[in-house]
Image (cartoon, rainbow, N blue to C red):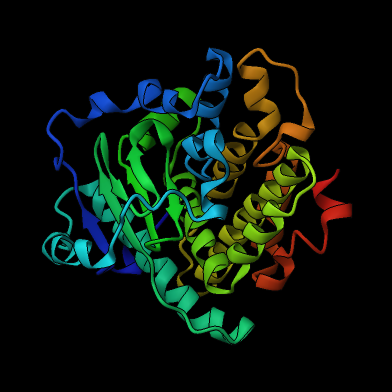
Length: 310
């Protein structure tokens, strides 16, 4: 994958090293605050945290990307001085890669969001951290995996995730990593077009947990598709893909389907409990975006009967 032509984003906030020894607050200890959950459930939610979607602590307390999370007294004014100090050109290779992928998303969405949806694009900030940090949706911890917080419109990424992605999920490669970031940026696009507030209302009105989970699945599959839309348009602009790149992303999408994660944890596969979608669904929607390059092709709600229920 050739990413150097994307440039570098100005919307990177480097908080690595902010909390000395902060990693000790992450992992399952941090997640146990969700109540009297069994260890097996905690493991499942921790695995889902690697599903390129939303903070799994959210899954314990309710889908935070949909509900807006626990604000915990967050104020955007409080964050601005620190943000201004920490937005800087990255010094290490992985951080330069992340900054480039964010820049690529910014440039593509700045063009196609107004063209395709008549919506003005405003960028999201990506926060790099190690161990733990604070977000507009509460505490961000490394065990949660990457997630998007709609309250502050920021993506949170512990850089060790990519190492864990290789070791624990059998995934890896630049385009697979780019897919992770583009998926989270897809949640930002959903927020800009007003989808996340609507899904929040729909979840509150849901008649059952299964119905609420179904809404979460559609949100996640749409973000997979939007990641594909970005890649399609970025390829037209920069011709950045190399042989094997798409296959690596597809293998990663297969690895983090809810059915695979349930099986890996030794649990029965129960579709009503899915929050991100099956392996087949995730691959299907990623490929749909890759093939179409069109936001409207990602309407998982309109296609719920024929696609997400397969």
